[in-house]
Length: 277
Image (cartoon, rainbow, N blue to C red; front, side, top):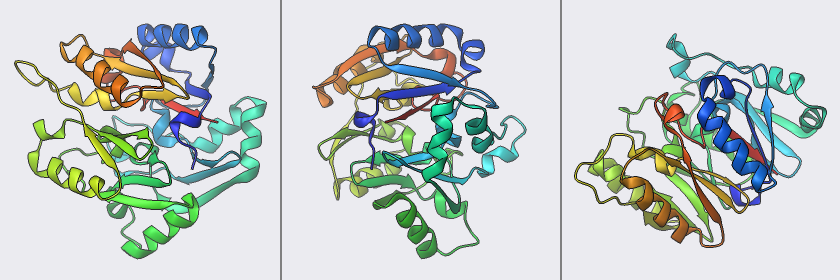
């Protein structure tokens, strides 16, 4: 399984410079400074590349899926056709289709967090595929991803059901867990209990007068190889998030990125990106 620490290239929607001009400029400057290749994907309907782009399993193996999650029924959200994005992409992007497979499941990439040889998802995957039994869904995912699976309960108050708003891999069998105890101690306890069976769990904690509603965004950082970009929200928690993520990823260069333009729209840095090897 190709994890974030093994990637070296990152893509964004061609809509990003228009929708988030300040964020886009900061990202471009830091990527160029660190000599990391990046490009923009055309034919995208929104900026959330993570949700509709395929999952890289191996160097030359990508897994597509049916990108029809139930939140697209809301008129606020538009459906991107990932195969159309590939056909419109750069020549070196198109050749990735040669070794691609498509699994017969409704899925979106925001609910796929690659943690070593395990993929962490929420149980929304079963809700989206009610035409199949739980065991069938698990079998298809295992065959496609060729790795172990770990399912977290889905807090239905969070309609997207994305695991990338809960957990992030820190390498060497460690995961960072967001401060969900400030939202729901019940679900936080269940998340932590499930994760601790497989990983060393490092919970993110923030000391502030009042927990800010947007502090969830820090877990949604972007890692390309040894470079880590952490959302900055103009809060006192910004520095605390940077310190904790830097400590968890000591071999990485950790940079802060003003990310309010994206966070106000409902996502953060992992959401707007698609990083591959």
